[in-house]
Amino acid sequence: MGLFSKKSQSIVLIDAGSASVGGAYLRVVEGQTPLLCYTARVPVELRDEESITEAMIRSLNELCALLIREGAAALHREAGNAHIDLILASVSAPWQDTTVRTVSLEEKRPFLFTRQLMEKAVRTTAPTPTRMISDTSVISTTLNGYETEHPWGKRALRADLTVLTSTIDKFAAKEITKTIRKAFHSHHLELTAFAPVAYAVVSDMYPLQKDFVVLDVSGTATDAIIVKKGVIAGVSSLHQGVHDLLEAGRGAARNMPGGGAIDSTRNAAFAPRVVEAETVWLAGLKKILADFASEHPLPRAVFLLADEHARDFLKRLIDESTIRTLWLSEEPLSVIPLSPEHTATLVRARGMADGDVFLSMLALFYSERLAKL
Image (cartoon, rainbow, N blue to C red; front, side):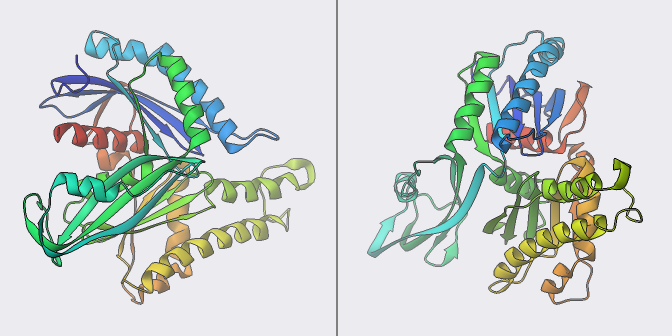
């Protein structure tokens, strides 16, 4: 089946994060709900003197072995063959970075707004020596001060384009690409950043929710995506994540007499170390939100993306923290930890697949893109 055929496709999905790496086989058949027929997830565990990138690549090798050894058979049972049309790999923080900027075009006489004009205007972002551009898209167009959903062929004196650009660390991208191609012997590989995936999918899942925050909390970093009137208004990153909070607990536990289970009554250092890590993370998150709140009211809906073991813990931290004072209201904040249940009706899972929210969102992202071709 051709790469861009809408009839049916078999796609390998890779989610490369700093807490874990996940992989899936996705079947997309025209007129049917996307189907995950195999999923797997491998934790990223740092070894002594190992960088987070080295640890992630080691886990990615293990994941690819699972996809080949177990997943290919699951795909064959579902599709009748194990042919792959495309591999789509999503890269999360700390290797991805996403920015939002405004590009303006203005003339003294009315000009015709075309796709060619738009593409030329947004090509002003150049990659740096250490980063590669993975995604560039125009997420809103304003002509003569009015937001316009279908601007092609219209005349204007001024056009303002909101441009979303994601970049990925070149070394990490090279290692990810080399590892995946070695495993699958395939050149149909695309890299994307998870921040634009999260924005696009949450917007599609909640079409009536035009103002919201997405917090993507990975092992070593946190991305905050702030959406106003359906358009990204800001993206910021924090270089602390779940890993820092867990390491604080592990570090305190290692100092306990006898190395027993965590018990704050036996180790006076445990509670302060954990509280300190939580305080640092919350302070960084509060600064990100406060910077945005200085110019715009904060959305009351917060969608939280994190690995399963951390979702409820992070929700409690946010609910009980002073961050809520930024909203200047006594109304309760709506913090929604996104889980597999939220995507269950949009992406099916059967056979050797379970409900993995990150992989399900990546499946939705690809399916929506395919539908627009």
